[in-house]
Length: 313
Image (tube, rainbow, N blue to C red; front, top):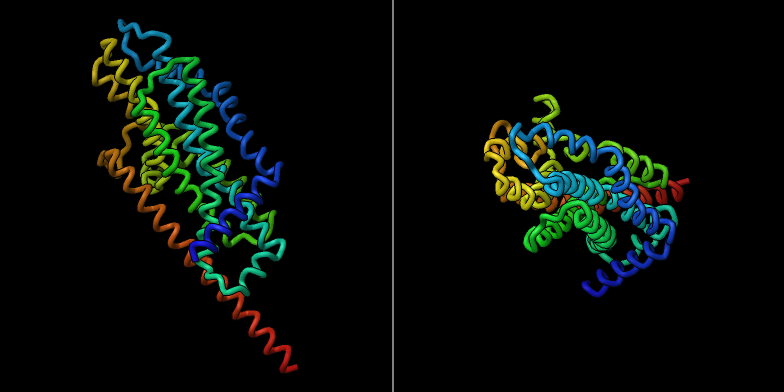
């Protein structure tokens, strides 16, 4: 079984990288997003940060730029770990279009094995793109203001991996119901356009109404964004404290940019954020495998019924 699993996983990865257009699109997406974030969001974040610093406190330009860069970094990672997963998962839909999925269904290979091979190959490709984006963002931070420790870098890579697992699970569950490339592209467009808003990547949840904040607190992606933001800005906040900015002011800044988030009035700890993401990912993977098996059985049942109907004629 494991030999078959690895063979299918390797096959899916090779097919993805063989499609140069698909691979380059996935690779260019984070570059475009980083340029757009720097061009349109950097000044907004900077003005917001400057207005939060009390009069009489002088904060270095490098520190302000480091905070702004950390916000942009966390926003980008929170979005692409999900959106890139939808692009990387195209092989599953292509197999349906080419008829390969139908051919696989008549083999003795378990449906769950095929489902997990799609998942594993997708997360592998997604991590390649996301680690490339992480490298680009760190170059940007080094240029504008570096406040990350070795521990922060490790935690950011861990966050990226967990978020990629979540994004891959979500894309796998949704895409197992897609049967055409048009449906796949429509889903990808909707996710790309809307996910950043509902997870707090584009606009902090503190700027939303109370009802939307409570709704967003029910979504696992919200906690993923907060995790990345906490680890990207920990060193910069420490720098603010070293420059004499009061703890109350720093605490207010953390709340305003979702480093501190609340679930119906209760502050959510870092450990609880990890737990929400891991448990949600496991549940979605389970739902994806179950949906794949049930859909395969329904298709096979339909074929049997059609054959019996044809014979009766």
